[in-house]
Image (cartoon, rainbow, N blue to C red; front, side, top):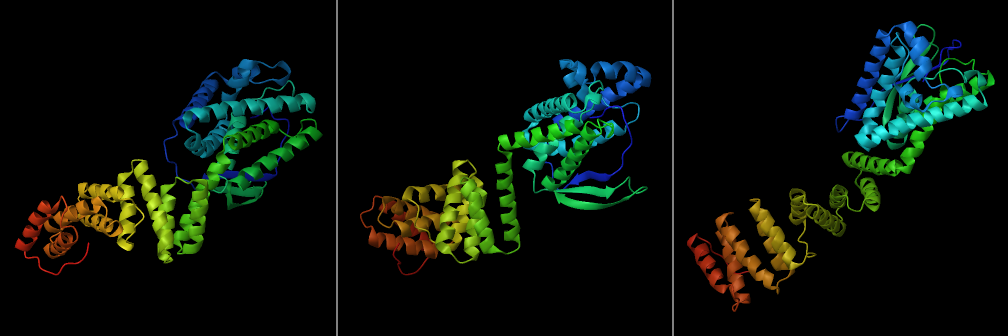
Length: 428
């Protein structure tokens, strides 16, 4: 937000121009705001500089001494004309930070935050002018930077650990000073900018408004609103969850299995239904040769995936478990269900393994009889292992001579013998 310039100033140069975070969804609201601001600016330029300065700005800019509700919001879309620097810089910052905040909030809540942030910026600016800078009472305030400051405040809280790339220097580099590229956590980058605005705002009070043509307190009000809104919406906790998971993945990729496991446990404590974290925790325990912990984590991941309808992920978690451990922690019906799901997907090896684990974990259960019969079919007809099928069926005949499935078992036994199976019986 700006006012007609009262003087020139030089000092700290801090210009963020990049972020190290990909956008996950198209920022329709952000681009719509940018397009609307630019369209209005072009219209203001076409109206003529004199008409714009003498008619449009006094009527639609927010003047603290003659407060108008319509100007409260319309002024957010007005920028200096005909020079493009004011609107260009504001739209660049809206593009830089708005896309990420819209990514986090969604377009509707993002627009609400934008306009309420602009209102908060105006409110503090009017209050400070009324109380401390009487010279500014009759000066119209225009521009979107107060609303954008609100978006920056939300960004600083939600993406506090994401690196922001900025130009930091003194004077007006490279002509009248020096500058260098820095990469700072977003909370630090936005904090530097807010700190500078606060310093300039205090100096403006001390000089009665001679500090320049920038409405510093509007920026501060917008940023304060954004930070408080983000905290109120729980975005700080959401960010901590994301960054904890990112740190865990980084440690995992570096081979720090124990430290990664500790991080994944922390993530799970905050997000107990995060199936991905359970899987990675299981892999960590696996690599550390901690079988019981790995089994529990794999099983929990499988339960969560299947409960949320992610069948492929759930079966993959159980497949990893079954290849390493002969777990006995599931009820018989669950083994049968998993075997059926594997068979439907054509993963006959995993299906046969489920049947074998059922027979081993619950040898006296009625489901174990069905497991032997169905597993033998897979061994014979899908996996080409008649000898193993024969061993299962011979053991079944010896241990369950009165089973209701014996007729089917005899037919499979004959089929196994015809396919060349041979071997001694092993208990199943």
